[in-house]
Amino acid sequence: MLKRLLVFLLVIIVSASAYGQQKLTTNSKKAENLYYKADQYARARDFGKALELLREAVEKDPGFAEAYLKASNLNKMMGNKPAAFEQLQQGLKLMSYNPAYGNYYFDLAEHYFERGDYQAAKTNYDAFLKAKPKNANQFAYANQQVKTAEYATEAMKKPVKFTSVQLPSNINKYPLQYFPSTTADQRYLIFTARAGSRPEHDENILISEKKAGVWQAPVSISENINTSANEGAATISGDGKTLVFTSCSRPDSFGDCDLYISYRTGNEWSAPRNMGPPVNSKSWDSQPSLSADGRTLYFSSNRGGGVGREDIWVTNRNEDGSWQTPRNLGEPINSKGRDLAPFIHVSGSTLYFASDGHLGMGGLDVFKADLSGKGQWQQPQNLGYPLNTYADESSIYITPDNQIGYYARSMMTESGASTVQLFSLDVPEVWHAKEKSTYAQGRVFHAETKKPLAATVQLYDVANDSLVQQVQSDKVSGEYTVVLTEGKQYALYVHAPQFLMNSLSFDYTSRKNLTPVALDVYLQPIKSGSAVVLNNLFFPSGKYELEPKSVTELNRLINFMRQNKDVKIEITGHTDDVGSDAANQVLSERRAKSVVDYLVAKGIASNRIRYKGFGETKPVKPNTSEENRQLNRRIEMQVL
Image (cartoon, rainbow, N blue to C red; front, side, top):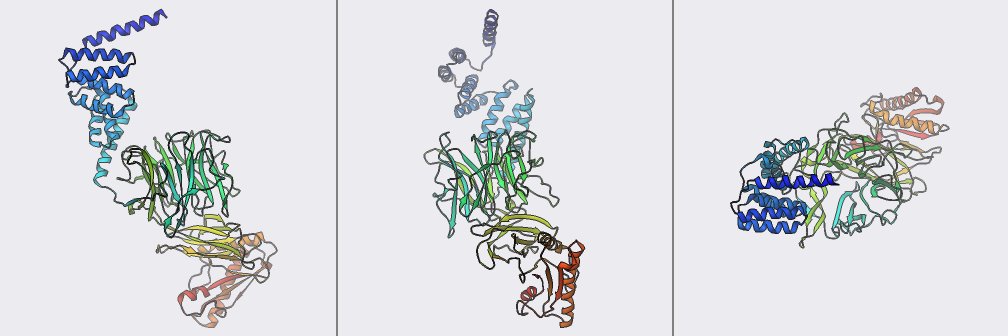
């Protein structure tokens, strides 16, 4: 105890000696005495009295720089940032450059940066760096801030023009609403809402339906989902049937915040289930974004093994419904800073996210990154000013057709209260996702009873025989929705146990204007006489050799035969009326035989398949147009 007392007295003596030797900028003895007396009160933690004395000191001598700087420090300690900024600014203005005041230049630069005064911020960061600070981290940070200020200054000279509109008051009815997104058909808007930022204010997920072009008053998405705990930062699949959201500190939590999943059948959402390991960890897991078909999930986490403070991770759902171990997206998406709030466009080709680790305007900015043809994420691009500013920007959502965006913006009410409001905007071309999309939507029915069916709906890219989407039709309503993206040719398969698969084709390789497709599907029971058209078998004009892009259809047909081992089928060929009757008859037979030969070569017993050609004798439409002729050129499968 005695040793500690001696050390304390030594510090006081040294400090007093230093003060006695300190050369101040004032010539007023009264101001100087008030300054040292204020220091004594500050040491006694009486900051109010110290500030009062410092005010008296600058009244005695308005040019007393050190008094302003000390007052700035005290206000900083008390959390009064406006006063700290004003006094720091005044104090440094009264002094010529001095390397000893490097930290003051740094603090003033931070104040200017927080106000979006990039040029003044850069000047003071430069002054700090000129002082050659010893703190390596602070030095690196200031260097990065200089680059940010330079970038922001140039970005403000080339603003990205867009028109934004605050969503109506029936949507923006809460003090806080954020994380907006829609279903693929843009019929439903979901977002997180909160009555305030205090702990007792509950966070819930709301949903609004658009009727006649107008968003209706939002309601709780489901009593099964919203509870007394906080539920928010939700994402919904394109068909509106899978919901993933964040909830924290629940009894079944694995970590700080976890991801939960719920499924909609008819109009009812299932009780949410904690996604558990390996998706959730003991760390913070939040801000999810589902792919269009709900089988790929992006989210933010600060778990170990990442690149920076918070990173973006991705996981895929297995066929049995389980989820794979999440993968860190790595660079160039993730940075040494914070990478948050991912949003994967329904096309799957562009990722939007918020980051303070990539060069931007300061704080969290919104970025976009495109997926290359080789499946690699490209360098993120800042969405620019004025969407991004010196303040934090949290997220953005862009509709499948790249036309409308939704985002949340912090602002002040007329009464001066802080609020977060939802806005829509016309998406400028520079922000467009790499590909735009539309959707096919309809219902699946039993062809005979006309009752809704639960069926698997699969969408394949026939160029490389890859499954790009898989959804289930609703067992209550039969509804399904799949997203179609420009530049691709798709095979759509709808199938259910004990039914023939239905094969449909969508060709968007011409990148024509995308429009929604309304398409109800009727599945035929597997029984003698049932038949379907195989719409994704392709032949060169006038020839019978199968084109490579027919592989998707052929493989689906093989799977059908393997799953239904007792079924025997007949493959029939049909043509339009172009050419002679005899030539068309031969062509139809040879095309049907090509299909059978392929199936036999892949192990399907030849006694289960036969073929026949009908030439142009059984048209489904009059051969009066090219569109009708295309329908007449077909291969059918019939159950024997």
